[in-house]
Amino acid sequence: MKSLKLVNKLHRKAKLVKKAASAPGHVDKADKSEEIMADSPAAYKLLVKVQRKMDRSFGIDGVGKEPAIAFRLTASALERFDFDPGAGFDYGMRATLPAGLIEASRVRPGDVMEVMMGSAKGMMLKVVSIVDGTKIRLEDVAAFGALQNNVVVRFELSTVKKGSN
Image (tube, rainbow, N blue to C red):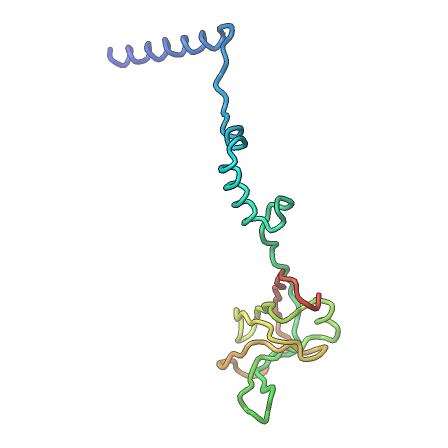
């Protein structure tokens, strides 16, 4: 009996709402939060401040940071190398790539190289400098084993503008 009363009550309320909505001169309440925000200088200032922090292009592009560009290639050699044999303390990793590939791929100091195979698999090494047209100096890994040949590596190019770009 109690549930029947509740059902009847719900039907009665639904009829009243339908009747009121169809009445002449009836206007639904609209969401005016956008107009209120636009009329309020303080609210507008706060909104723009957040947008400008997130968007370095000030409203032109909705993404604050471009995704990193990544590509894979095969390094002909990867080894731990002493870059200053006289001092004995200037060790680093050296990756040897095919001629012209460093220039074509636009790898620069600050980019990251991930080793995809071999005993160094999974290592993320930062590019320290470009030694010459075929060799890249990477940060040192003291635990690295012997020379590895034909190693697949993945470069992540940073999106920060560099002086040589």
